[in-house]
Amino acid sequence: MTHHDHEPEIHDRGLAFDMATMLDRRRVLALFGAAGLATIAGGAALADGGTTASAAETACAGKVPEEIVGPFPSDGTNGPNILTKTGVVRSDIRSSFGGLSGTAAGVPVRMELTMLKAGTCAPLTGAAVYVWQCDKDGKYSMYASGVLNQNYLRGVQAASSTGLVTFTTIFPGAYPGRWPHIHFEVYRTVAEATAAGDPIATSQLAFPAAECTAVYSTAPYASSLPIFRRTSLSQDMVFRDGYSKQMPVLTGSPSAGYTAKLSISI
Image (cartoon, rainbow, N blue to C red; front, side, top):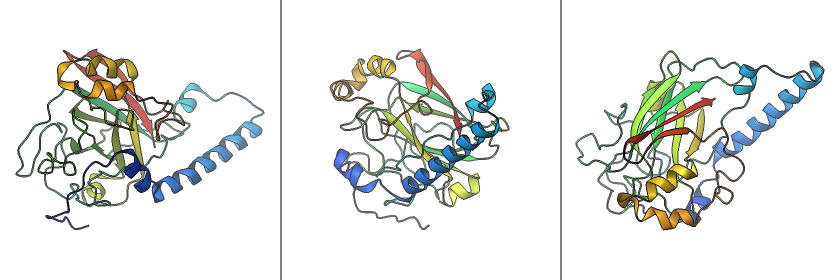
């Protein structure tokens, strides 16, 4: 895909725009994938006479749910494409790059995501993960008014021999209509990711309620607290059907920052 230097300005249009643009081919593929997995699991239960799977098999039995990519991916599917820019492969995604200046302020978060093969728990060594999120004010760089000339809070990392990818970022702010979250796409390799190829998985991470309340009670996130109080996981368009495989475990505090850990089966 070719990067366009002069994309039309696209503002955050809220939940209505998200719902109108998000039911894409990836959601359809996810439905077929889930159906296939259910069929396989049912067959295994009949074949073994109802015996229980091992803990390891259970841990990686189901893939992370396939979710909508959202309207602000900057992966070439809706406007700008950051994936083909030199410098996008990085661990610390808090600052803009590629000749742009600016750093996203906020409570620091170290994300530690372990990418595994569903069913076997084998590490997906070399797989590339692209993450993107909003800033503390709920705005997505490259799309929202005021941050059109920024590309922070976006980056790609390759999984280590143990399947681990790490990102240093900030706690995302809250915006109307959505539970606080981070988006991600998984590619087979860094080369495929930076060529803006087809991802093998697209999903989102949900942040725990207690940590959201704690962070949003601090001054830098003052605008997020009233929005968050009107939001619930049970009503969120992505997480209302379940989020057990999408919610990292967070340790830390608003003053010291957080570490977020999650194993993700693909």
